[in-house]
Image 1 (cartoon, rainbow, N blue to C red):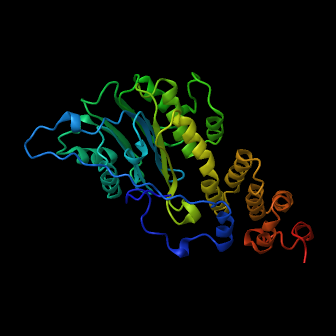
Image 2 (image 1 turned 60 degrees about the horizontal axis):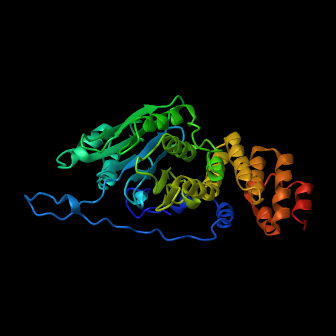
Image 3 (image 1 turned 90 degrees about the vertical axis):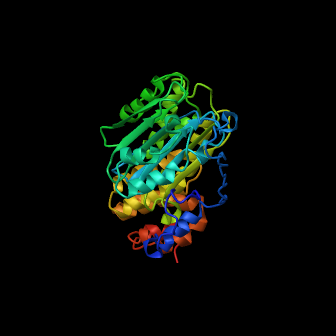
Length: 384
């Protein structure tokens, strides 16, 4: 579900003229068994009288955090992954808007930097200019930490105030395949944390200090944008992460038209508010969420003629959840669109044998139109 905040995704629904075809929506409905309501958590502002000194005991706790903010020009995805020894970090730190950029506001975080930074970058300012504008006139500027990336300028910037608690710092970069990123953290075990995060993005490697959980291994099995953000986060934790420990984590990814059914831009909005191992839980949630997002992505690639990428996605879905054989149906659609009738029929047979209720939709699905003329299709689909 999308955040209620204006900065996350697009507030208004996409026009029906841009929505996927009806048969596509029917297929997607099979995966919408439950839809939860987003939890809206408001932040109580610090009330102080003009000209008085703020009572440090009354101030919100510092968000000891490490995060990665990134933009992939090849897909248009923007996002943030974050972990903290802080309750519900996903309600405060990560912000993203498709075709604009992404922001992480942490340390003595000011969450208004999220929507403001996105608006400034959407207007054409660079990340550094947007950070400078946010900090201008801020009495607590030296206690802030910010990371921003712009989808318009293709740049990244990070800022760490001099009064952020040690170790604190960040770095920016661009990977060989063009991923633009900023990694930053405060109250970390050391600079090696952000270095490991950057290295994970640039090389794909993570330190082998602790064995990955089963959920983490599955989640990192696909080198998509979300997987790379999660890998960077895990790499940072492998070298110590937040010096105070673990508690919450979040993953926010936006991409034009990548939300449920193609109607919104919020591809992933996953939050672990309080857990003994938030990395494992975030990976588990990503594994659950991926079918929704990847089915949409797979069909988008197929309709655009990038069949190889579509095949890779549907093959991954089959491996991700071997018990759900309906993923073979989506693979069959992509294969049929690509003109590989033999392989399409093979996967379609697996899907329809597993779930006969898909037979009637298969008879009417325009993506399978090339198969409707074949006798073998009607043998599989029950004939008429």
